[in-house]
Image (cartoon, rainbow, N blue to C red; front, side, top):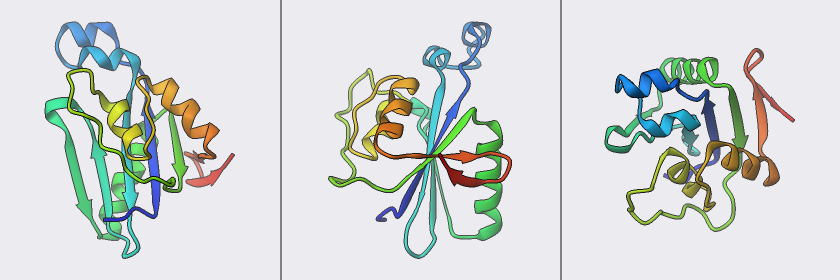
Length: 139
């Protein structure tokens, strides 16, 4: 699957109490990042990189795509759109310090470790913020 566009969803940091009760990972206190992309035949891939619980959804049904996009945009503090960058996807070495950010950054060939670091890199490379209300792209 060769992506035509990427979407990155940045979520609010988790509360420490949720980490103590094991509802969330300790890394979630930094925030969480999810990704989505589609190819030329409009098959969408949604990726939730959550360590051992990583989830991937593939669909080309318009209703499912709308529902998945609406849910992620509504629950994200920020959503960015960016075209694939030259160099393509770089796969991170499997190391214990990989997290949702390092995995999502590798989809564009970038290296980042924190959500705010990836967000700055996306903006520096021309990513556009998606307006949650209108679901339109724009700076």
